[in-house]
Image (cartoon, rainbow, N blue to C red; front, side, top):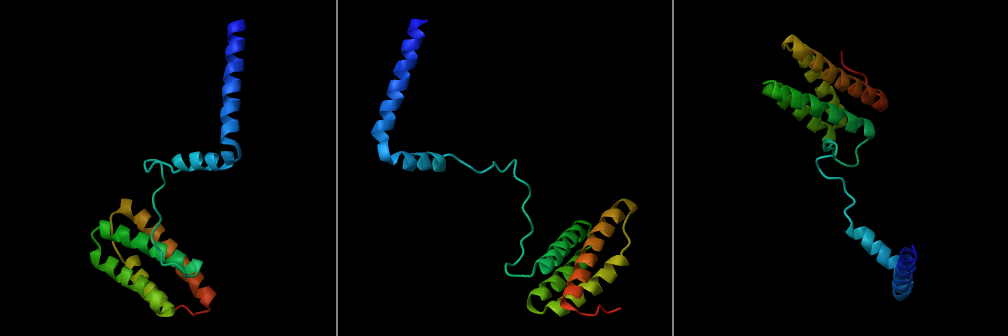
Length: 149
């Protein structure tokens, strides 16, 4: 029992001596130790990356572009390459002329609504197109534009 107590006191004295030697640089050493330790989450556990959106755009415009990218990717994976290209072109016009791009997106949405796919895919297509439609309508209201009928 006495040996354990003596060992504990020795360890405390050694640690105290090391801390005294480090002295005023203790905060700097602690920062260096923390920065050396990896603080990022391994890529296996990270959530998937968000779609790239040009910086400096209005948040509702960014929402329109993200919804358009999602729908375009879905269309491309379901062999609707032509419609996907039209959707990407319309979304691209938003960065130069936002009103014209929104009107072009509305036109493409009409074509998407007329698209015939199998019933299992129809749910996802409807959800994605509704997401884009709502985002476009919100941006129309914000810009005080009249949607073309």
